[in-house]
Image (cartoon, rainbow, N blue to C red; front, top):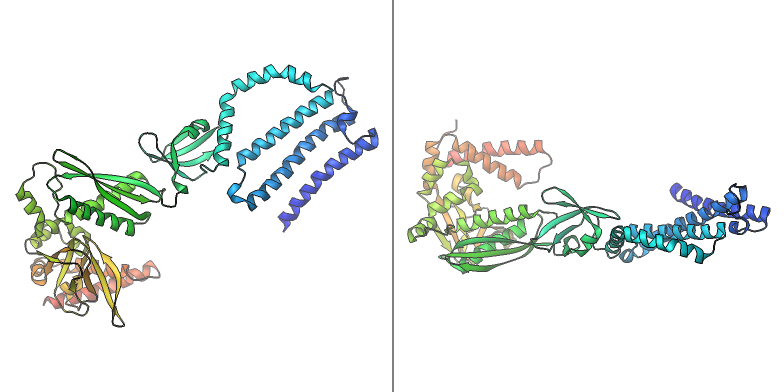
Length: 479
C-alpha cells in the first residue's frame, strides 16, 4: 500500500512541477509557455524566466517519459501476448527526448525549422552512415524482442551447418550474449543473430529434437536391432528425467558390411547434447549386449555369434545392473558357467504371486510387467527391462513370490537356481553380508523415509534380517 501511495505521490509531484513553472511564467511574463517569452539568441546572459523556459522543455520530456512508461506497463499487464519490449520502450523515449530538444532549440533561439534542417542535414547524413551498424543492431534488437524471438534464459538451436545449442544469457541494444555447451560465453551482434537460422526450443512444447547414430555389422537382423533400439529408447524416454516420450528408430544407411541405425528422440532444452547422447548410447548398448548382439563390424564369424548368444556371455554383460554386482569377477565367471537361458512368449506368466521357488531371473531381452493381486484382480505396478532382475528374495531366502511377472513381448531370461549360487556362498564367507546389504538398500530405496537417519537404521535392521534368512535357507549357521 505504501509503495502504491508513493508511486501516485510521485506522479502528482511531476504534474504539479509543470503547473508551477507554467503558473510562474504566466504570473511574471503573461504567458505560460516559456518559449514565447524567452529568446536565448539575444545575449549570453541567463535570467530566471529563460532558465525556467529551458526547464519547462525538460519537464515536458520527463513528464512524457513517466506517463508513457506507466501506460505501457498497464498495457503489457493487460496484453501479455503483445507486450512492448524494454528496448522498444527505451527507443521511443529517446526519440521523444530528441524531438523535444530539437523543438526547444528552434523555439528558444528563434530559428526556423527550414534553417535548422538545412544546416544539419549533411551532418545528420554523415552521422547516420557512420553509425549504420549501431542503428542496425538497435533495430534488430527491437525486432527480436517485439516479435518475441528469444528472451534471457531461452535455449536456441542453430540450423547453420552443425546443430549447436546456445542459451541466451544477456540481451542489450548491440549484442546477444550466449552460453554454449562448452560453458563459453559468446557475444554476437544483433543484426547477425537476426540473420541466423535458428529455432527457439524453449518455446517448443515438444522439446528439443536430438539424434544418435550406431553402426553395427550387416550380419545382424535389422528388424531385431530396430526392436531392441525401440525398447532402449522407450526405457530412456519414460524413466530418465528430462526426456520426452517421443522417439523413433530407423535404418539410416548401409555401406559395405556396416549398417547405420538412427534413434531420434526429444528432451528438455536445458540438457546438453553430450549428456543426452551419452545416456541414450549407454542404454542402447545395455539392451544390445543383453540380447547377445555382436557389436563388432569386423572379423565376424558364426562362432562369435554363438558365444555372444550364450547365457554365460549375457550374464557377464548384465550382472552389474542388479543384485549380482555384489559378486566379484571370479564369482561371476563361476556362476556364468552354471546358468541357462529361458524364453517366454507375450502374455505368458513367468512367476505368479504366492508361488514358492528358489530361483531368480535376469532380463536379457524383451520386457515384463509386474502385477500384484488387488481384490482378486491383477494390478500393474511396474515394468522391467533388460538388465533388471526379479525373484532374488526367493532365490536367497526361499520367500514366496510377492508379485506376478508377465511377459509383454518375446522375452529371453537368464535363469539362476539355488544350486547355481550355493557353491559361491560356501567359498566366500563374506558374500552373504554383501548380498544382504544390497537387498536391504534396495528395500529401503523403495520405501519412503523421513530422513537419512531413519533410512540407515532401516537398512541395518533389514540387512541383519535378510542375512539370517539367507544363512537359514542355505543350511548355514550364523556367526
